Length: 245
Length: 245
Image (cartoon, rainbow over all chains, first blue to last red):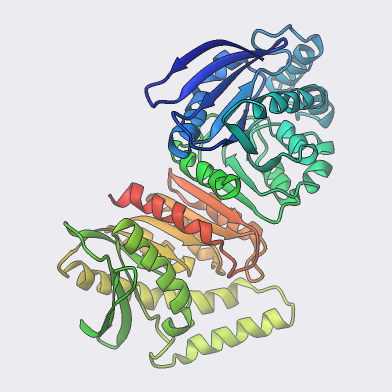
């Protein structure tokens, strides 16, 4: 892991960009901590860290400044400054074509888009976790939050260091992921945008129902995909505080 | 209004029982307040204040101790120490019979149980509001929270002093109330117990969808009717803090 930039933000949070091999990432740590802090992995769709930065940093800085958590994110394969990934581009084009034509988006299209991304990115997040947890001051336990939800589902199933997850049900979920969802047992808090233009509400409710976790909470709010209200930051952080402290 | 008892609780909150004509009630006020406080009306099903006391007081004391709100509740007609109400008893018996027989609970049964309760109790809550807001130290604005949700819906439509409501979607709602639900415009936060034994989940989601409010949030949690998790107290209070301060 190589740190490539470092700045102290006005809330005292330290923001460091890094690379892990070819993978860029960002780490936020609290101004000061008397003991190793829990870590929250901040997930996102494959749109590039630069484009996603305001939303990711907003959440990460809140967790760090208000709760003293560390937070980190890495770039997804095929996105941002990472090498193009022809299969991902093709799957996206197919999805866009179907949506623009007003056709139902079949599971085949969703699978082609999401499953390779899950397969490739989950080991990368796990590798990042190995490195991040070896840094001084970061001790775990670990939470995961954000989209795309399929990556979160797989991580919640395969990665025992993740003890709680806050999902954003704003993605297309292949039918095959429902089976994995049933195997999740960690506490979950799930955000749903009621009028998400790219997301089927009933499918999102069915997925929430499928999660195997004994403690799971759904927070549904009005508005479209990017309209998650600012006031969801506090209960999101309180959820992690309950389970990571 | 006559105060019939008064005690200072260990969190500093002052709990006073009162009667308003024939209607008993309880008022909780914060230990100290530098200015008139907002007021939260705590709703409940017609099971009697004495039986509901632990749950009502738990919420009221949290609002008072943590946020400095006043909170109050009154007994519903036909419940607790108030005179029996034959029609309510009959409607309850009909409901119980249908549920025990495993029959679908038709809208007729729900109407017979809920609509008279709404008609009779809403003016009582409004009368209590007149009196409570005239007390020194209580200034409004006013929130309403709890069940039964049909009383809350009617209050949210007809009572302009109520500026935010936290509903508990654990009641049977007559089809006629959906029309009123569409006319609500104040911010709402709605609790749903995902496996509520006495409540149809899809009907609760349909009702949430029907509310006309631009800001409405659904918090769904696992478990049965009385299993609302303790951790919902904080976001419930934060919701009122956003809208009553």
